Amino acid sequence: MTVEVWMGKNFDTSYEREAVGKFLDDMEFRFGNEEKLHLVLMDYYIENRQIDLTVLKKDAIIPIELKECHEQFTASDNGDWSTPSGHIVGSQDRNPFQQVQEYRIKWFNLLKGNKHKFRCLE
Figure 1 (spheres, rainbow, N blue to C red):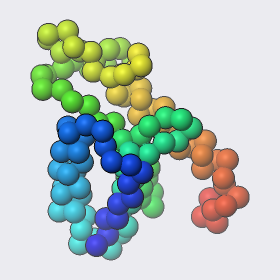
Figure 2 (figure 1 turned 180 degrees about the vertical axis):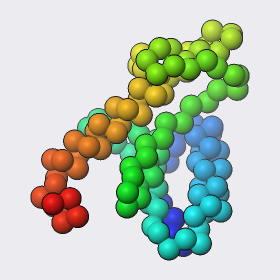
Figure 3 (figure 1 turned 30 degrees about the vertical axis):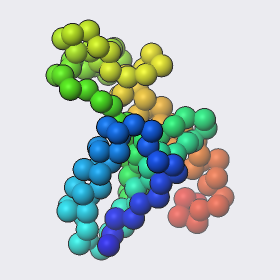
């Protein structure tokens, strides 16, 4: 199998556990027979930020933020993500896009700070 999973801890909410189950099924269906390795990190922390999912590939780091929302929503890069009923999607005054941007920066900082430990980054 070319999809390997590492779980920091078990997700707190049922919607996260359900979403991760579907996500892993889709990953296995799409990439299970490929020779390229796809690592999936689940529910872990970098620099005191909890990250739901990250897919690591040879050429990409893909952070994923899980949200529960049963309504259509309007989204923008820097503004609120909101539903017609007024529900705001996101946390800590950041929308999911901004959260994922922050996670990418944290990954960049982690790799940059540990560059000397990875031969492939030299």
